[in-house]
Amino acid sequence: MTESNNIGLMDKDKLLNIFDYLNERLKENQLQLELTIYGGSIMTMVYDNRPATKDIDCVFSETNAKLLENILTLTKFTFNLSDGWINEEIKEPLKSILKEDKETYKIYSNLKILKPQAEQLLAMKLLAARPEPAKDFVDAYILCKDLNITTKEELLNVFSNYIPLTLIGERQMMFIKYLGEDLGYDWE
Image (tube, rainbow, N blue to C red):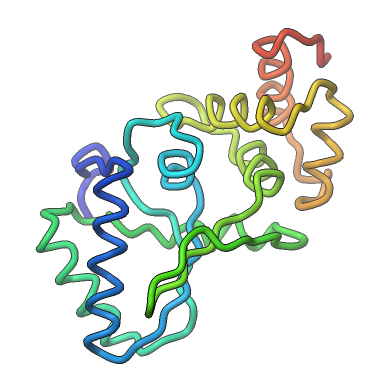
């Protein structure tokens, strides 16, 4: 595994080309795959707030693991991607999720791409609350604007629909406070 800062960035067009390519390889191998994407890849493709993402945070449906691994290796080579371009580490924070509200993002012949609804994505960003250079803060800001969240209560209601409130710690509390300030509200 290389350092994350060595991973090449993928913009919206490159991500879509990668998904097209994956679909073609799946079709050749008569495989169907459901892929749920999270994080930066959603913010890059759906919200257009990022020029690019360094990896695709995702979870794969059950499939032929060996064939899929070969397809991912081919994809990495073809698009000159660095190690870590597919990131399944999202599985760990998903263990804290009370429910998943997924919706279809794009359907190909052999590949179906799902994404969490904006509310779930916001809850996950609040739980992560990573400092810069992670983009959690900017993403949470955009999602609050998109969802028209103006009060701390609304924000905590969204959070508690997906993640137990008991997981809010000091880091999340400060994150929410500063998020409110940046949005122009006092969320003390």
